[in-house]
Length: 427
Ligand SMILES: *Cc1c(COP(=O)(O)O)cnc(C)c1O
Image (cartoon, helix red, strand yellow):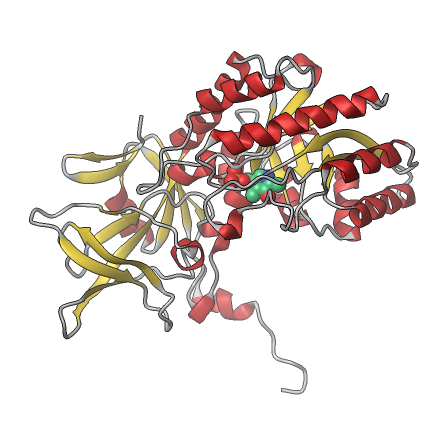
């Protein structure tokens, strides 16, 4: 079921007309659907459980939502209440997860460049595991843990050297990417960690990329991961957890349809072939992308000599950078579609650079100045990547639940924006 639907010629999010939110909160604004977040989480969990994929102590597998996809506290709390954990990549994200009520034993700390301060914070918070990505990072984790009189519970991130995922900027599983260690290094590091006074190795992890729409590379990587677990156990080492990362694609409008959560779960059960271990997952986009939209208003339509029609919006690349950064395609849906033949438009923002283009030569229902539109599938890697570029106010966020909505990150005032900076004493 889709929770963003046209009803009586008007686009709704659950029981709320999106135009009402645009009117009350102003544009641009991100709007999220609680029911969609809940459905995506539940469908994935149920699919995994149905295939016998288990977590710690034979319970449900840990589904640690990748906070970097959408770190709004209200969104995190919506998922935490269903039992989700959090996959974090900075102290800031760990703090967000804790503030939203994610218990530390469901927080995974990932990332290639964790600082000593961040590691100390994670250890004091008691996170479930630190996914270490290199030998120097493992040594640092050990030093920090020993200075705190504790052991760091770690998993080793392996780079399975497979190609997967849409855009080159989000592929992470090839040997020449910065992520993880090779299988042979993983075996050596794991054995070293088992003899290190500051470390408690509990498992291995991989994450091969994002927006993956083909299960084959995942199955190839996961089969190699199973082999690694079996080899480590063969050497007498204890391996309790296997974290298979995120990366499952979502149905963006013009992309190949991604595998369903049921297909994904079946593939895992098949490749793991009864391997008895506690499984963890780090989905981001799959949970969040289609749970959010970015609303914007048409400022004017500018027709250039030669006939090119530019729709100039009040949203810009600072609010949604995916088209500029990843050549991403977002469906553009008018909130109240007008009748008439489609018109070919270039849709742009007001920022002073050509990169501020959302799409070129797209046929859309006719638009006029003042019309409201929604960028669909903007719930992941949307608001989290927004900035104040061009001194535009940070975009607000709204969470819908049924017939209610709440502003969960207000639009700052210009005074607040300026107050964050200071003059140097000599000025
Ligand atoms: C980004 C990331 C994820 C989430 O990826 P999605 O494609 O959004 O599912 C999970 N794990 C790690 C380590 C990541 O860096």
